[in-house]
Length: 458
Ligand SMILES: Cc1cc2nc3c(=O)[nH]c(=O)nc-3n(C[C@H](O)[C@H](O)[C@H](O)COP(=O)(O)OP(=O)(O)OC[C@H]3O[C@@H](n4cnc5c(N)ncnc54)[C@H](O)[C@@H]3O)c2cc1C
Image (cartoon, rainbow, N blue to C red):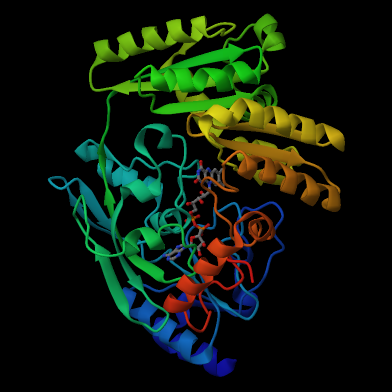
C-alpha cells in the first residue's frame, strides 16, 4: 500500500494528495440519502491531464479501483468511493480554456462548475443551457451523469450539449472525440457513449460544450390546480400549443409548502386557494422580444384558465427567481423533513396521470408518505419517499420504480444509477442490455478498475 501511495505522491505532489486521517469526510459520499460513507485509500487532486494519465497507469499496474469525483452533488452514490480504491477529484482541473462565440462553444476542463461557466459566459450574452438544481456541480459530473434539470424541457439534457471530449483510458491512453462540430457521422459515437457512463469507462479531462444565447425577456406564471391529474393532463396540451416554455415544473402541495417555508416565500396566494390547491404548475416563458413574451404569457394564462387552474399569478421577477430557487432546493427541504430516499423516474409524458395515481396507491399501503415535484414537461418526477422501515422502503421503491418501467419509463431520468439504484437496475433492466453494458465496459476497462460496483450490476 505504501508503495502505491508513494508512486501517486510522486505524480501529484504532497499538496495534492490526501491519505488516511487527512481525507476530508466530504469525499466519502455524495448526496444520496441512503449511502453508507466509505473512506478511500487516497484522494488525489491532479492539475493536468498528464497527471491523470500517470495516475491511471499506476492504478492499472496495481489493479487499484478509481472513482472520479466532481463536486459530489450527485444523488445516487455515483462518486462514492470503492473500498481500497482511490478518488480522483477534479476540483483543480478547473480552467475555462476557450470561449468561441462564432462556433458557439466553450472548451473547459471537467472541474469547471456550472456557476463558474455561466459567470464567464454572461458578459458575452451566452449561458450553458443545462441547469441541474445544484450550480456547484461540475461539467465533468454533468457529462458523466447526463444531468438534466429544469431547462431540459426546452433545451434538452447534457448529451444534447456535448460536442467533444478528451478522455483518459484506464491504460493511460488519451482519446479525443468529436470537437467544435455540430454534427458527426463517422463511426460509433464515443462522445455519447461516455456521456452518462459515471466514470466506469474513462476519466474525462476536457469537454467541448455548446453555449446558448441568453433570452433577455422572461415571465413566470404560477397556476394552482385542485388535482395533480389536471396538471399532468394539462402539460401535453401546453407543449402541443407551440409555446416553448423554458421551464415547466410541478410541485405538489407538500413540496410547495416545504419549499416555501424553507425559503420564507410569500407569493400572495390566498388561504382559500391554498386550501383547495393540491398542486402547482410553474411555467417560465422567455423570448428575445418583450411584446412576444407578453403575448405568449397571455396565451399560456388563457390556456391554463381553460384547463381548470384555480387562479393564475404572473409573478414579479424577484418572486419568480425566489420560487425557482426554492424549487431547485426542494431536495434540501425534503432531506430536512426526514425523507428516506428520492426517486427520479421518467415516464412518457402522457402516462403521468396514471403513474402518479398508482404511486399514491402504493404509498398508502404501508402508511408511507410520497411527496413530489419535478420536471413535469419531461415526464420526469422527483419523489421524496418517507418510509423509515428499511425493508418496507426497499419494497416500496421497487414497486414505484417498476410502475414507471411498466409504463415504458426508466428508473432514472437524470440522477443516474451509481451504487444506490444498482439493486433496482438488476431487477428491472433487461439482462441482455446489462450483458452488453458489461461487454462494453470490458473493452474500455479490461481489469475492471474504473468505478467498479457502480452503474452495472455484478
Ligand atoms: C439540490 C440538488 C439539486 C439537483 N438537481 C438536479 C437536477 O435538477 N437534475 C440533475 O440531473 N441532477 C440534479 N442534481 C444532481 C447533481 O447535481 C448532478 O448529478 C450533477 O451532474 C453532479 O455533478 P458533480 O460535479 O457533483 O458530480 P459528482 O457527484 O461528483 O459525480 C457524478 C458522477 O460523475 C463522475 N465524474 C465526475 N467527474 C468525472 C470526470 N472528470 N470523468 C469521469 N467521470 C466523472 C463521478 O465518478 C460520478 O460517477 C441535484 C443535486 C442537488 C444536491
